[in-house]
Length: 524
Image: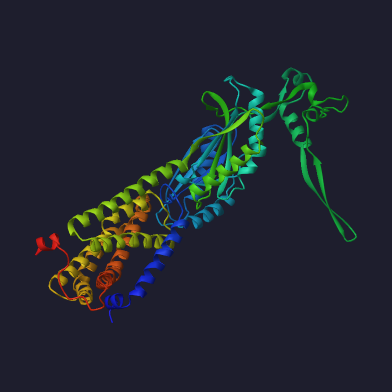
């Protein structure tokens, strides 16, 4: 017994299978990630090394060139380039497409471990360039007063609250990778040395710096075993207040008592400002929130917004301060996806309307109308299995496939109607009509699949961008093929039972033509 015969003679089985697939599709739909674009991974790694106070020429000779020579032999590296600027070196490695970036990162780290760089330089950092590393949310923490002037005390208080309180409250939110604070005034202890006094005492700035470094320590002092107890010993001598720093002893010759405050002014200041954040002309502190690579952008944004709402409701913000959302990537994503969804729904309704205008048959339109959502909903299940997220490209593929998934159903239904016009019984017409065009419908669907499916194997950013769309169209077309060979003949064979039920007659329906079909008459 063929698949088509099973579909028409085991209607309950096909009906339950259809319900099951639709159920799994709806469950998968609510579990799909929502993003603006598919996950794009660029085949690049950036090695960043900082060397404070060094000129670009020194950065190039001491850091950039040694790093380039050490990493140029890494497997699958196609191109190495560097950017040397004052105090910072960036060496960019471009890999061949298809390279396992996790393994490449491990190999790069191994090369960096044995590389000898200046002691004053920081440890090289390995960065992955990814467009999704843009912050998904930006908040501005600012005062609510009417003054737009520079308020040093207010900016210090807001920056301190953002670093010590707000950051700790938002980082544990599920899906949040990092919370970066910008703007405001960041606390810094400033020691302004009087050069004339240093010269009189025959001291150097380096000696003062070494003395500060030696006094401000917190190091391990070993352990102490006493019976069954073991105690860890630490040398804790960190400065706690500005006064303690000023009271630090400086005894160059051991004969006089000289303290740091005698030759320098120690005060609580703020770091040199590298960025200024203004909202509506008023200075503020920016809180940028980054999501994890595989997290759902919309879900993370909603979780962060709930956490911020709890902070505001519980009145834990500083007095006369407010937290305002200035950028939300999820809004644009929701708007873009809603537009695509609306276009897909309108396209589906218009296609059903066009079918009804041509067929002039409510039952035939209903059969094709059922096949459309079944094909789309079943596609969601396979999207979840292949890890495809709901984004502009995948939803665009669904919108593109909306008008294509009904093609096979129309061909099958029209052939069944042609046999009915010749007087063939409804059950036999459903079986033979589907069998006659089965190979033709399959060839037609596979022709469309042959156009879209090869896009999955395209390399580069374009391949990653169009992969979701190609897979979505391919899956929906293959599902529509199965639906046209199973669900369509099953629903067509139900017409006889429905007609007998309405007429109240248990006798088989006599063969006869279906309602007037202008399309079939025109083609004949």
